[in-house]
Length: 243
Image (cartoon, rainbow, N blue to C red; front, side, top):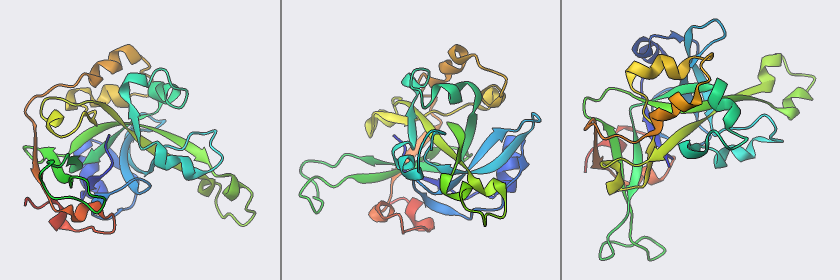
């Protein structure tokens, strides 16, 4: 899975990198992005242009009665995208790219190493990023959910306030590099296939699914970081500093 990541680039920087328009105000630097936070996503608009917009991290399906389900839908397994009702329609029509500086994963602790408060081996957080430090382009799905409480509020100043755009990260089996610490990893979309993934008119899920095969091209590197990242309230540059 992918449960924490780093996002420090501004909307105009992301837009420039992905060849898109910046359609959102800055969310600020975040060295400890966690589920339910707002995140950036690159998505194709109805006019065919790519835009950088803000999304709630944790998918809220259109049929959901409230937003509580979001915390359970931060990731979507690529192997079942075309099967699950919550994802198959989105897989065809509502795909996005989620830019990341890098992400965190926790390496299992050694049996003879330090223990946590529950007496179990303490896991070591690792920061994974590209060797060249360029942004990661992570595959995701998005949807729009109408908040029933906002819809019933006659004081709502804008009908747009009734809608919440949310997203989930697509994951796949770990490649050789990632398998050292976890059996899953995000799906990274190469630059050569960004347009294909974002194209709203492309519903060839068989071809799109070829992106989900884990490959190891040597572009990723990782290093241990402070356990301060375990607490979502911690949010500053020292979280990615190598120990």
